[in-house]
Image (cartoon, rainbow, N blue to C red; front, top):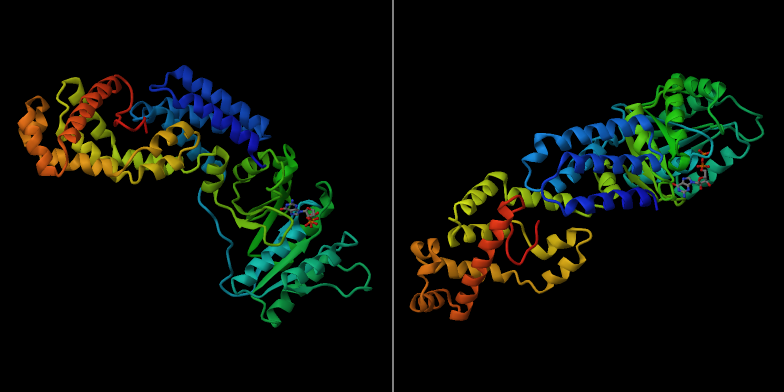
Length: 445
Ligand code: GDP
């Protein structure tokens, strides 16, 4: 599928990182090199790759990561943010005119998927309560008008086309008449399908540019086949110079495209990708979300949500406090209790693990983990005096019995907690030397 290889390679790169605690500049360089190769192999344009890797490198070597709780994840997050950036940042929706009809003109090479997209858009707009009119201004290709007619019929949309038998009409006049027709017939959106050529040529550009001038569209959407590969950038630039466009439609994202077009076009033209076309059916159309696309490429599942949760639960300050306590051996059951509560803030752990890709073995381990365990632990610690919480060595037999009764647990439960606390304290001491704070029963976040 689209981005499959790119995804695999980036995931692999991050997997290698994930096992590391602190990152050295050599780690960062190695990672950046891998990312660069993966992007180039996915046909992403060289200038885009250069900018991208330079930003990632700079940020990954910066303070941002050095101070981070988990540098590896921080790098993943940086890559994600930069990826969202080159995909256009914020989602951009179709813009409608204040005074209808909204005029949407389509441009792009022949075979890019313009006609198909026209039908898809008409269908989607109808579903949203609009009354689109499709205008057949592609008079170049013998069969184009016919094709739009078929698509319009499937979409249940009205079409405006020159009368058959009228010879080859003037596409500019047809487009203009289409808009006037829409105004008279109360269509609130006009979608103008224009001619494409197999390659970029001057005449085509001039025609498209004239249609633009004649109809003053609210949106000019440049439809580009995601499978076009390295040609994406040149084609997009040619259309930007020749006609200019307000937004991009990526078509055939369902194919085996290596993804380069998607990753290059928005960044090179500075125009947002508004739709992704993902199949031959008229329902295969999605509004484009840069953030979701980036997650898909990075195959992160919801790992970023997870990182955010982890970060807000164990914020940096908290981590420092714990590290400090560990260093001075003053980590107590009170701190343990506090950490437990932080864990609860992080929500259901099983759900969280479900969000982590590549955590199969960990997930199995977690199947045995009972979240109520935290509640029980809390109950036990709460039944201790402050002195006991600060110094578990005070916990002799009679104190343990009292605590068991107070918390509604057994002495065995209390013993087991104290034992786990000891283990945790030991484990955390190790972690304090460069790793992430950790909770027993749970691996590094
Ligand atoms: P136009 O010349 O720009 O109008 O392109 P068409 O709309 O005629 O599309 C060219 C070919 O690509 C047709 O065979 C379409 O069925 C196909 N096509 C268009 N969009 C998509 C898409 O999103 N996915 C796939 N798989 N095929 C598409």
